[in-house]
Length: 403
Image 1 (cartoon, rainbow, N blue to C red):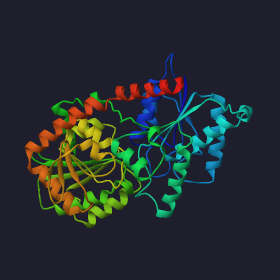
Image 2 (tube, helix red, strand yellow):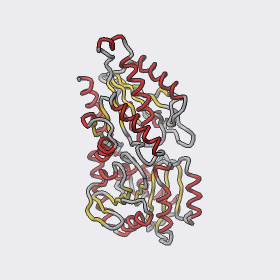
Image 3 (cartoon, rainbow, N blue to C red):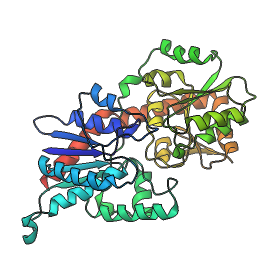
Image 4 (cartoon, helix red, strand yellow):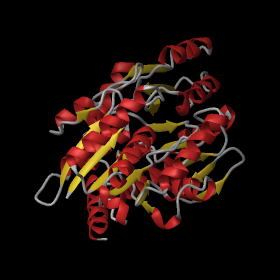
């Protein structure tokens, strides 16, 4: 079974790991997979090294990138030619741009044949995975409406649409009316859970690097420094807590907003307690060194940083966006500013005072941190393993190929 997997770019984040793992695993007597990836725009970091480490050699389509541009026409033509050369059984697209160009090129390949005249187009199945969506908080209302119209149209060409969580399914299908319910399949993310089994010694490395004492609580954000991550909320929360000498904040990751965020931290007077570490390859060690992982996003699919934090046995606090609600579980205790859930603390607003209240409550309650972290670790390791992801996708491909 020949699989053609397409992603807009291998930038730092969960989707790049996802497609590399699937491409690596689906090379056997049963499956043959080719990965096509676009180029990395300025201000984003390249994860091509992750493909190299896993023995995956992508076909790079330099014209294809995140933003809309005239080069998209060239990308579409090259994708069509590649599809025609590969003759895949399944075209599986990931992320919005690749989903658009890949499914248009796939539809042209499917129908641009003499067989279409007698109702026999080429037999190729098309699958799209929503790792997140751009239907709010990314673009202007007018541009968002255009993207939504495109996705509704492309859904008609899709044999299956994959989402990462129940919450994401509700948003994309029920709220934004993309596709038919029977097209959708929930396939949660998968990670290499074993990499988070670390010794106590690794915990001390970061603490020494940032000058944190044994009794200091380290609150960390891990991810790209982009608008959608709403990192200003974390900075403003830190400003409200700057008089507490036993708390340090770290931001792990990079992006085009880093300089602006560092200036904002300086203007808030929190530079002593807010450390920007940039991108790190020792990410498992980083998680092991943190006491709490915080996420402040405006929009998410299923955030990799929370999944990894929970796999590492760390308590988490997050804004209530996208698949976060599914990760944190049902509410156990409702407060004015936040909710205590089975596997973490959830903040339903974007107010710094509310986030600060939830974070303070988590810091001050040892039992809560331990209980939610243990439940989170068990939940992730039972449902979000890399092997489970691979088996879910194999099962889907076999079903599509037999239809």
